[in-house]
Length: 428
Image (cartoon, rainbow, N blue to C red; front, side, top):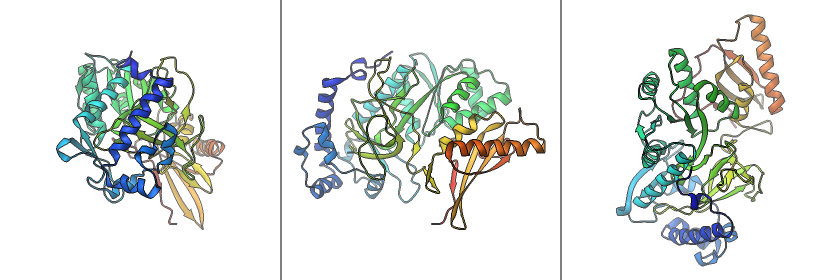
């Protein structure tokens, strides 16, 4: 099913012409922003120098720190009387990043989400529960707008109060659910404890954090949904930038609205199809806050497979974030790699925490892992055997030693928003 088949399947010369036209318009619009006027001047380029799509590479990257430096409204390209909404990101250091939307932006954003939801089979009349934060986080109102646009009856359940969430799914016969994958696992655990009947659920839309293929299989088996990966970022509107189709093999990134590059995060060099690197996005559909070559920090790769669904460009599911990437004794490690290993060990539960310390000038990684209470016997011999089994599996995948500590089920923190599974305690 398509929401806008013409744009979703745009390819070849028609796509290139569309992208170039929208890119030139975006470049002109950025000249209303002091940061970009200075950037172009410092780089010795003018807007009219962007004559082809390849010319985009003449423009320097935009980074998150640049946006924070423009707090609060330094990156607005329109007058404030045209702004209809303001969101901010969760500022982990210093000021948060402000993102603004015109009426046209909100319509474009909701339209992209309508494409995503239609693509995975949601339709008018479905009951859709949105278990995302409804405050300044874009996942709440953004997802809500898109589901309403296609005619769903949206339950704005927000985060928390998990037992009540489960009761609403049961009582309202909810068909579609949106939340983070880590919260979906927690909801699944609680539903199993309650012996709840969630048989009405068919479609799960999960995003805002990296998650493994094994977690997808677990959610599909235990929650009874077809689980789809969602990608978005507040600076690029929010959720809806890319989404999986029913093939569940990569995420379609809406190429009529976003020009995508993959770069080496260390050198900035452009990488080819199938090469893993940092995702750089130039949105060519934004009015209030246009961006050029924005470094997302997300690690993925371009895919060249033609999709049976007929839609265009795809990126692989995220491997993690460049700023979540741990470098331990010269080896790059992502939390999603650890999760993938643990999900293949039946004695292990769904929750884990990673700690990195510097001991005698050497990096050491330790992992706390919840045991699966339905499988694990509790015998001391089994504890030692399981610790060794996990440590060996991690070493086989990561080529790195890790100390494994087994903890009781339910003892590790649960997350309603993005899961923070890594605590780096090294003092450099």
